[in-house]
Length: 201
Image 1 (tube, helix red, strand yellow):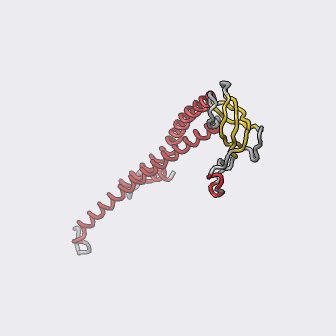
Image 2: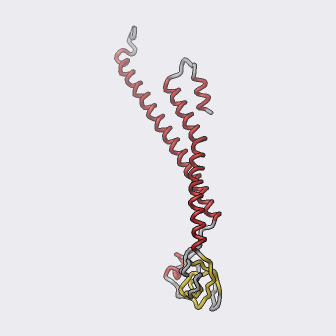
Image 3: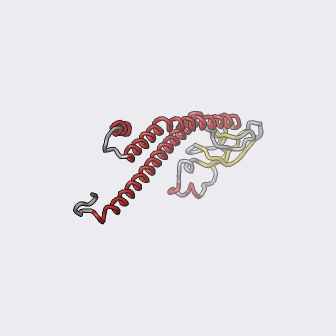
């Protein structure tokens, strides 16, 4: 609004310099880009990310299967689990030796991380596997994918707005430098005669 008001006030102002009007137009252009173009760019990127992520969600849910594993015994503690200073949410989970049946019917056995605090032989817990029964990470869910897409769009819009503002500041900085350079040249020309009687006559 300051840019619009400045342009309107300076249209016929006799004290208006060309650089003042140019700076106002640069500010107005930047404002329009930030308010109108940045949201569109963010929406396009967010929409594209949403499409890619939702396709990944469908592919992961089609290729990964939740099965039930049965505890055989507790596994040995890894060095990272033994050190309380390095324990994290993932490392705090209990390592167990378990067996499960793959989606193709094959029997599988191995060491897994379970959410059981005190696992005992015969306890059951859910795991995700591929079609051959190999443990894999939990598939991405649709809500999480949408959140990532929204963040991608918002981040892109903010980056675009930041780039526009940075460009505006750079343009204004160069204009101010040129203005000062012209003032220096004018002072250099007027310097020898400044203050003399009749100077400039």
